[in-house]
Image 1 (cartoon, rainbow, N blue to C red):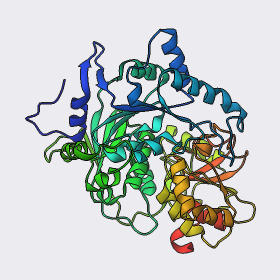
Image 2: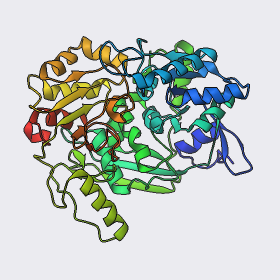
Image 3: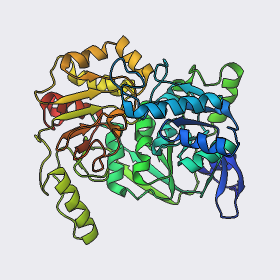
Length: 470
């Protein structure tokens, strides 16, 4: 049931009501999806199921296919550079062509990670709904969109009907007060929120990020912030659109133009939560004094500030057991400082931190320096567009001259689906979004950080506080 227009509404209420088609007998709502982006790990199976049922894609003009999860990142790559990916790439190609879907293939000038490409091309717009068969679909909430990750069965339904069946989430507002200090980024803010509310603290909610810190963030930073919403267990997360959003979107290939832009802009300016709107939960984070964050354990809530120490074991038996397992895997003890801890692998990339602003920030740390002996460092731009822009600015030479590997666009070492993995026992400082056991390779110990801390660790060969080291 939609909310009465005569009572104050949250932005979530407005977006949900605007896309509500009907309600199922099981209580789930049918929500219309404006645009969606597919990737090659899950879409081919959905295409096969549609074909077996003699069904087609309802709106191929609103659907886009991306080769990103399994693609090799080595320079000069082909579909066989990573042999394990060839079957996925070919199946994605065949299914997309059969259904008349625009495919961003490995040699496309705009290929990249779906959550990077969709915003930069203007596929995702304020107030729109968006679906991707990937948990980090919520990334594009940085533009004020309502985005949902979906499974293969859900994807088949979306492709056939242009709708998704969802239980209506509750509403949470996370207010970010204060301002960020030097070298403190949206990644640090997101990790701090997860540390505060936990990996299940957002379960059953859609989260609106508000407050002075969110308003002051660039769009790239908002995308990073929203990217980690799923790590709180939430269904979706977004920042209300504003002039920063509109300026960033104007002129992008899939954004409206001319009179359509003017009409869209007038509508987008209404996309705010009303002053008296009710939220089911409110969380306030004071960001004044926040320092760069780093994970010490094996989930994104096991986080400390860079000058803090690994916490003591919790009294609660379940939490204590979880901490003990994480510490054993990471080779750490309670009370340990992470500062000075040797590292041997660095990864800068993923849909969390591989946009042009992330690469610029990392390059500023690295410029004129050398990667420490024994450290393998890899940079993978989030899209071919980002890669092209970085190369036009000479950032590739900064990384290469320092001893980094410079890759082609793709998901790469985020989950290792393309073969980019560490070795057992590696300690990796990574700009990705998950530090689960084995996520970046069997036995790899991952510390999640922002791009500047990753760059600083590559140069030092150990975990350092970039605020005082560079």
